[in-house]
Image (tube, rainbow over all chains, first blue to last red; front, side, top):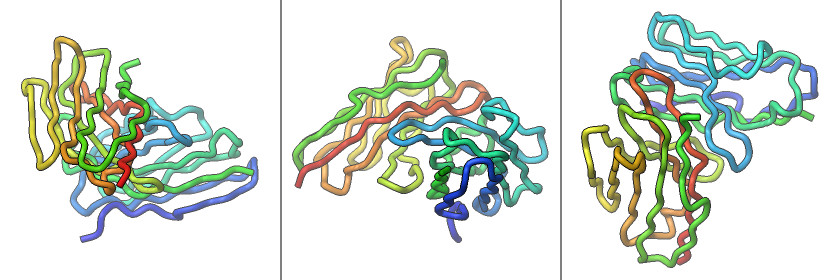
Length: 116
Length: 110
């Protein structure tokens, strides 16, 4: 009966490397969201998956960012050729229904990404 | 931007006092949600208020919504040291993405 699980919890990598972040949503949750949170800031929407619909990628900041989700389970966020401005906490959330459903989002504890 | 903005950015009170924080947004919404974030953790959902509701209570929390002013307030009564956290409002408009504000950092001094 676990909540949303994200891994790794911390990631330090050199500029230019690719990183892959993983999110395991709550079982049965059809909607999954990725956000970026810079230090002391609010959440910046990145991408939204809802069931088998095409994802809403409108928040991805550049083509270096991509995300996939297999059915209604695990999602991975990939950042290619990382830059120092990518340093942030990446948060994943899932919810029972999509945005029309008035369901709350359940968040993981995030992956803290540091680019050297 | 549709993003909500919380006010104040930071708030420090004594234990037992009430804490009030506000959220303003720019466009029509479907619902507004308040979340809490402890340092180094993810966000925890506190309360959701629909656009046709004006007030909602949950334990020591009271949320109001004024759609004519495009604003909401979160009141925490009889605050405790454990309420120390950042508080965010999030708005949703008819199927678009959620927009989170920049948060209010609340410190409750024992």
